[in-house]
Length: 153
Image (tube, rainbow, N blue to C red; front, side, top):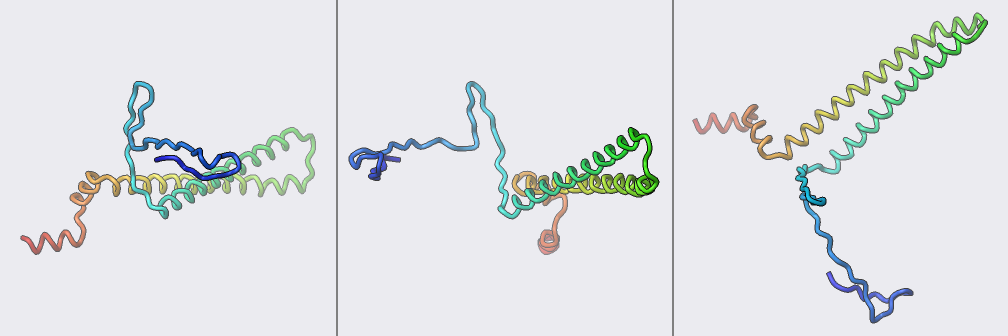
């Protein structure tokens, strides 16, 4: 690149900072091995969507685990208590099944988000790879392809 001759408190006006360019690219060489990587074109909106789905997935799995942990805590406290008040016993009859079903619901939502994320990543890979894109187009021709085929036949 060159020398930057910007005078400042620690740099004399005659001296400069020597900046060396760093080689970048899709091929990474480490010691005696090489690793090839695929590069996928991901738009900012797609990246934001993936981030939101990952955050939602983490949140619902955490909430489900919290429900099951709280349920286990209630069960262990009830088992260790010598005598529980009647109101507490009646409340636990509604709270315990509610926590169990709430935890199951959170886990089901998390699994649905997991599959959504997987299909979204598969779509990004399909749209980024020209060979996969061509295979997908030939397997399911769109409306314009059918019109073109009808016009050329």
